[in-house]
Length: 217
Image (cartoon, rainbow, N blue to C red; front, side, top):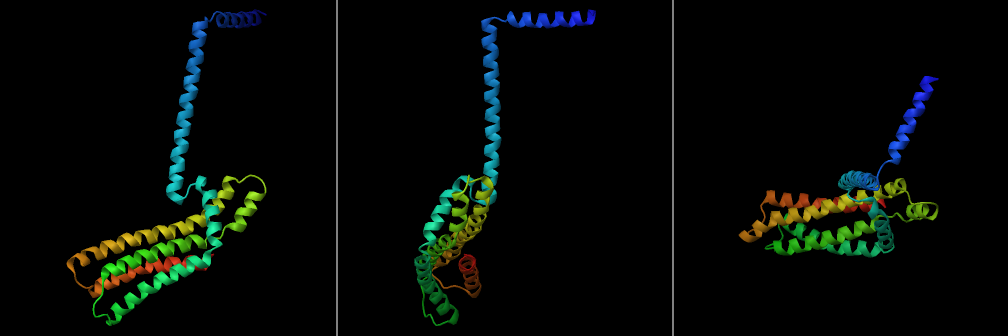
């Protein structure tokens, strides 16, 4: 009985203490709670943002970009033959240049010309690869019924990222080709056999990635 009475007294004391809290103290406590909640929210947002950055670094495409890029891919795929023709025309010019140099039939040649044509071929190749991404059926299926969830976006992002990786490699090949040929152009000389092999290896990055993309869609 004494124990129960003691518990009742303690509870009453707590209630009295709470009731004795002044408006100033109450306001201060509420502001402190709001500040703590805000700080926690900032920390959570920061962690989420860092996770998203890591995700983008890994995939090359964020989930926020998936829907926009999927729609772009669908529009481009409708005109895939035009992009393929543009690429074929551009690649014929670079092919012809390399063939004449390799066969020794070119009495003289311009590396500036080849550099420009290679840039054009890469640009056409990138546009063609973008048109090869056929996600229309998958995108329509996912968006027609229910919510376009993260898992559904991830499935589409897999295809977009695969082609995006090829584009990144081709873009890097433009830089590598320019870095290789610029000093030779400044020296106003022809390619050595070893340099020609390097040119061909860089050139293969373009043709290989476009071939893979064209066989994948």
